[in-house]
Image (cartoon, rainbow, N blue to C red; front, top):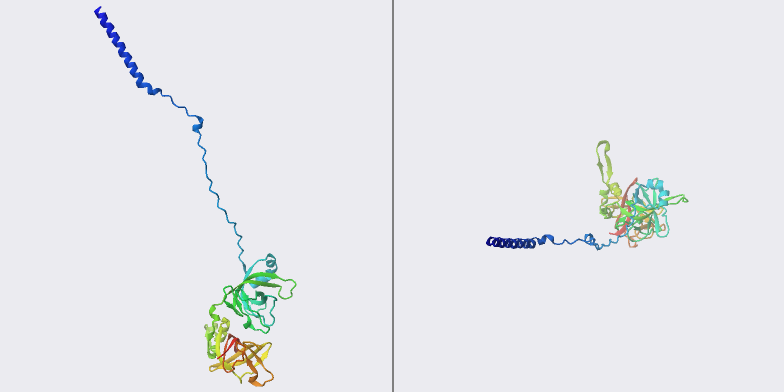
Length: 332
């Protein structure tokens, strides 16, 4: 009986031991059975992004660039004038500008000058019209009696342009089929002088250096050049102090031009003036005999002292010799 009691007691103790182990194991393993939260479909969608759009900059309308003028020769313009005139195509032409000898074309605010490839005597010249005025790209009015000295233009920068100067002119061609002369003309918007500004500064000189000759080149290429012709080709203004040579050449006036001979202590040459009782001009009083009939007027319009003149102008090498075309007369 005692052994049975012991066995039952042990059995009871074993049961208690198993119960404790089971209880502790249940407490230790409980985290393995934590319920997992199921994600809804809303949580899988990306949130809608609220984007702020930067406004596009306001674009400035593209300006249509004015086409550059077409560069032509006078001959090319004359040959294509009708088409260029119809299209309103602006052109640029290089040439030497000259005052017409006897007739100045134009009316109102425009006057027609001659544009040549080389010389005023070129067989084919282009008539270019320039606006009268005082500012850039204009010319002075032409007096009733005129010569080359009265061609005074100003280019786009204000530089003065005289008769025979090399220029570039830009403008619109006009075709005039009903005109017997001047069917093609160019109406000038812009003038650009191609001459160095130094030609407008009068060169102080005596007559002798103007008559000197020298040779350029060698052998068959040698050429004798007179200083007068060289300065004349350059259109260089010169200034000389002279008196009238009353004995070697009688004064004469023809077709609006008077010509006499002038001299200083170093030599003599010819001078030509516009025939008019006006500043920088000359007349011959036919009621008076000899040199007393010659009247020269200075830049103020007063009669000048023929024994003491300061003349400014450009030179020419004529068949009869060196000549100054007088632009300005002042007293010595």
